[in-house]
Length: 400
Image: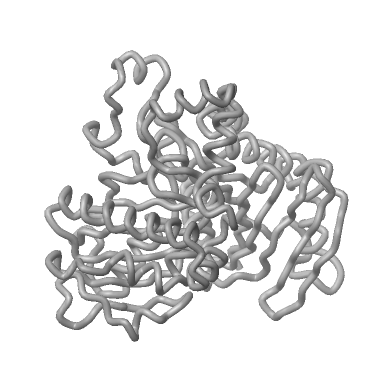
């Protein structure tokens, strides 16, 4: 069996899946969370054995040790030892222009990922902590591979990724659009091409990854040519706690009025805005929908903003690509919120988009939801970033 362990680390969490690449089935999965502020592990095997308990996780190292213990001991045991694992694949949010594809995580690579942390302060340093934690407890013969969210968007042309700042801002500080959710967009675009029986290179796809963080990507010939997230994951659509696109002058005005430091401003825009900021209710779209249905005005506005922005970006990306063959929805909201899909695609018949209201009721599974006479096919496609990371990892180590 070719077993790959996939790690997706956050600042206080470590999500994982152990995948058998012979049949691409998940052997076990779960999450170590509240790292540094207590600790909790959740774990589930393919045959339904579960583990839930509070554990002290001062750092990611203790979390990884708990994961190893769950995988190799007791009734949750699925492998004899970590020697059975071929490799560990890590999701890394920001690779900037340094990393254009997946690679082996050498000491030099890990150091460079940490250097890029200022471009993704919430994510990259956490990835480094997880990489070092794995290194400290893994057998020496088990390689680690890093897969970058930004790599998929390296195909964007200059006209799409450059900002109209003085050019020295790009040359000195590498300020440009990077785009994120690349692993998800790559997976679902390949998957929808498979589902409709065409080569992804022959398709124009608009991929809508909608969740607590959201981004929409224009994919032509299997390559990203534009996307809504920018220099950081703050840009683009309204999100759970992130404001999305905003006039830069509004930010400096806000700083002056509220006396905010740069870090306080970043926290305000990233953690206190978006759904929670506008609605005052929640950062979760399910709560927003419930309140909207109860005629809460601010919830109604929040929902309308989201759907309006999705519609706007779909239209703009259709203009960029001179049409679209497929629009797909993925992510927690994209896969499970029929009302968002319906509103976002309403009144787009002139663009060749017609939604089947009954088919649109689907949640959490791959399905075409457009009418037979819709010129643009609309699909729900559940994402599976972990599987793509595992595939990339296996591909990299096979070349060693």
